[in-house]
Image (cartoon, rainbow, N blue to C red; front, side):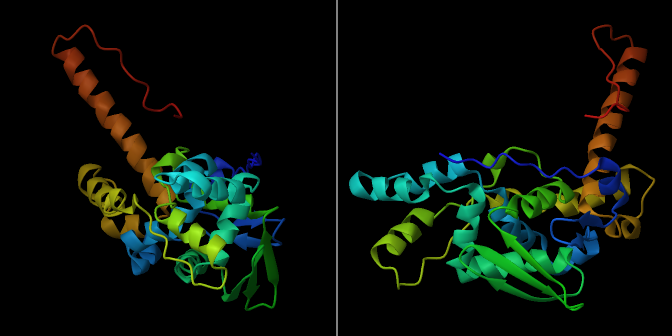
Length: 260
């Protein structure tokens, strides 16, 4: 089994500042969209669009052979076994119009002056209004995948976002009938993520006394999620202090200022 071992790390200050990310491998910059821009897409569709970037090969393989027996399971395993996660994602994009539409929504958010996106079996070609072209292929796809996972502040547990639901049937059709349109892939776990952004916004706006809604809408997701995480730790710390002052003796104060 071939696994992707590369990781493209973004400086934490760049993320917290919401600054554009210069990607020399693509010879362009990737912007961090503000929440009011994400809101134009809608929270549910936003997470649907991100689902492929959360693909985990092991979970994907387990999912597509689930319920399959005999030759079907063998064919599915053999078809994907030697592919990297990047190659699998590019395959799923090339063979499904819905996935293309979803990915385009994310690229519109993160690429300035996006003019055109072309999907090929082994690469994606991005054309900007400036005339610049960027090629994303299986060798450098991990870069855009890692950037997206960081700027949108996902945890590393890829199992939470498994876009393989329905894929087994899709790939069986691909193997048996090459010319037949593939079935639509659906993300089985998207519903679990909806409404998180708006909940964080209202919590910070009401609970922190430091931000109004307009301030928060002009932040990036990374900024809001980091603030929410730190705010939660600070609230926990405050409750511990109150408990100690009330006579509790079995409480160890957390250091809410530490990076975690």
